[in-house]
Image 1 (cartoon, rainbow, N blue to C red):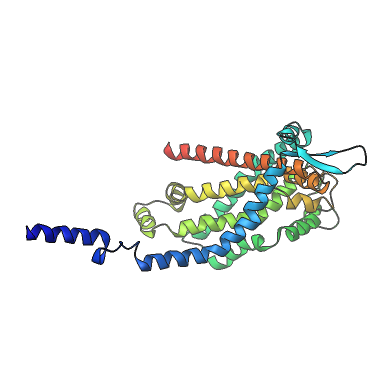
Image 2 (cartoon, rainbow, N blue to C red; image 1 turned 45 degrees about the vertical axis):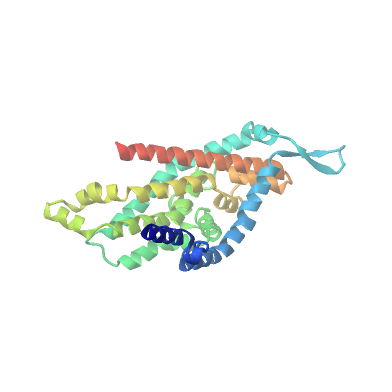
Length: 315
């Protein structure tokens, strides 16, 4: 009987803590660690909430309002419009044309840029490559140049009588036919090195013993790149593809800069330019609706791309 009482008291002590008191809520060191993590993340979380989540939420709410005016010169007031802004955007010929334009742009430019980035990364990772640091920095430098400055420079290069590109290849780079592909050249020049760095970093993470085994088996450099390196860096190629799709639908800075020297770029040339023009004309609610439709299209295209690549991996 005494033994059973002792075991019962011991179990009660383990459950409730010493002397029947409440059990500890957790390890003090773990609680201090969590508080430290929360303190480090708090500045970012506050800024992210104030300057990202709150503006997006406000714009989303504004997209459901329309501006009404009493008479020709009456004060403008916002009234609930439901989905009227979205219906207007979906039937806007300028928006439909701009979306088709950037889709054509992405269909040609994104694969070309990723192929260039992949080629640069494989060349830097080859056994015979020399001056790797120099070329890695050289390929990446265009990304460090601000987009506006890069677009201005390329705009002069494409202008006849000012730049060598227009003189060596005498076509109207800034005309209706070629201006979209002039923008594609600027975007590719800017972001190919950035994508190359992502792919090259993935190549550096591959175990070198795999290459040694392939070399012992008699695999050539081309076979090693095609059958070993590219399959192993598939995830980084997919990642850069998603980034490129998002960037394509957000095309803004390059056409906006080239508008000052080309009459072929209208204020609705891309969806972002159209939203910017609408907001500049005080049509904030309509611009918000266009922006959210563009965000939805970006999410859908990215999801479709990921699903297609997943099927490619499973096959």
